[in-house]
Amino acid sequence: MKTIQAKVSPKILQKAHLLFNQSHEGLLHEILQNCRRARATNVEITVLPSGEGSKITILDNGIGIGDPQNLLHLGNSGWEEDIQGMESPAGMGFFSLCHLPEGVSVASNDWETHIDAAGFRGSTTCELHPRPHLTGTKLTFFLPIHQSHTIETFEKALRFYPIQATLNKKPATQMGFLSKVNWTTKIDGGTIGISPTHQSDYEPRINFYGITIQTKINSQTNLVPELWPVDVLVDLTDNSTLDLVLPARQTIVQNRKLENLRTACRRATYQFLLETKTAHNLPHSYYKEAHSMGIPIQEAKPELMLEMPTNIHEGFSYWSGETAPNYPGDIQKETPHAGSILSKLADSEVAALHISGQPIPLLFREKPGMEGYSWYPKNKATKLVQVLTFPDGKTIRESTEEAPEIQKRDNTKKSDHPKTITLELTLDINRVEEIKTFPTFIAFDASDWGEEAVASNWLPKKGNAEKVDTDILKALFFSPSSEPESDSYETQEEYFNNLAQFRLNEVTRNSRQARLQRAHDALNEWDPRIALEALNAKTLILHVHPKNGITIEIPKTKKTKKA
Image 1 (cartoon, helix red, strand yellow):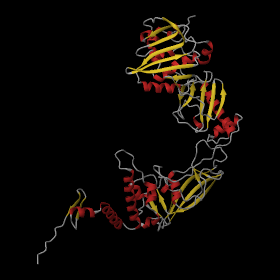
Image 2 (cartoon, rainbow, N blue to C red; image 1 turned 90 degrees about the vertical axis):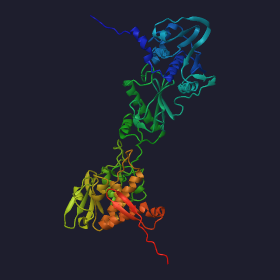
Image 3 (tube, rainbow, N blue to C red; image 1 turned 180 degrees about the vertical axis):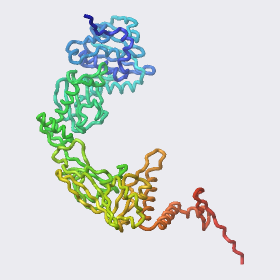
Image 4 (cartoon, rainbow, N blue to C red; image 1 turned 180 degrees about the horizontal axis):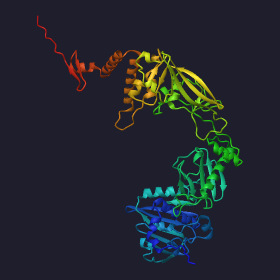
């Protein structure tokens, strides 16, 4: 029977420099990990300026390097069995130095050598030279970066490093990875720490002897993305809990270990919530999982927000900048109760209810994942219809999202104004439909916005046109452009308000009076008095041309005869 067997080509040595991303922080981490595995208890680091870069010396007090050949044996680390089992070293870390421009000098026990790029590639041999005995290992090399930047990189690499270290003869700033958490629990291969306050997304969440992995909330590599703002950190001591991608260990292997660790983190979080009685906002599915694990955590905090009317098309500004007056007074927005109603309505329908001015039921916005808690509303507002009855007895029923009958009528004609306008709100109360009716003074179609909508997409109730103001029309139809070449928001808003006021004047007065008022307002904005003063004149004649714009004529004054 023919067989095949895996081999490593010697040609891989020619590409050894591509096994690492050549980041300076990654290089330093590889060296520091080797110091730790050599059972060092102290690491002395010196960074001195040298030309356009830095000369770096790293000296540890570990057991040293017994066989120098292990340095250049790619894939064969030579570490003791306990380290091999716990950490699965790749035997590649020293090759992270292969791209250094001047190579690296190594001294340990009673020998020393210098290894350059050709030596790492196996193109040349590296001579060993005897030297006085040295306890531990000493590395010396050059980095083409400024001393201050090199020191900053070391400080970051040493932040959670578990061995005492000095940097230019000063103790490095070091701390335990879980020193700021409130609660910890041991797991195989490490410790889980939990804090009730969320750190920055740019802070590391996983630590392996000083090598940290930065994961953002909601990213695939984050352990428990839905637990925000509770923070979960994992301090690893070996690879029994999680596999990190070799050789740099900067990313997580996506395998069963990761899924098991996620479950362990959730279990730890549930236990933390139970023991500390910390309030949480976990989805209901997590609440159920905790109870299935035998950890009876409390329910999530009821944090539903009231459904407030906003600009229908943009949704960025609250209605008139105030809390809607249609809800009962002294309401607690943060603590909705089981009798509340969940809104399934569109923005325009919510706006229609609030515009009516009638007291309405408390409506709350949906919160995904929370359905199932005892406080989550069971009742729902499902549909809103506006019913218009005209003086001729005709009745139409239309939604606020699509109301073609409104557009067929002229809101400047009193004969087109409905006699009555009511809103019919359909509620699903304990699976039984109820309809509540609210009289109102305006009907509208929210499927469009801008100048045309202000002109024709709304009708006032007969005799109630004065109740419509620019704030209402703005909330219904104003949609500012955010394009770079557009006018500022303030300019667009001012133009819209002037146009809305003109349309209101057409409805409440008549077309001629509205146009005269608009012309008067425009002239006031220009302020002709300034022109009179500038031209030293008492009278000006304005000639308005549709194509050529406005021209100014100063009338000639008659000269009076001397007496």
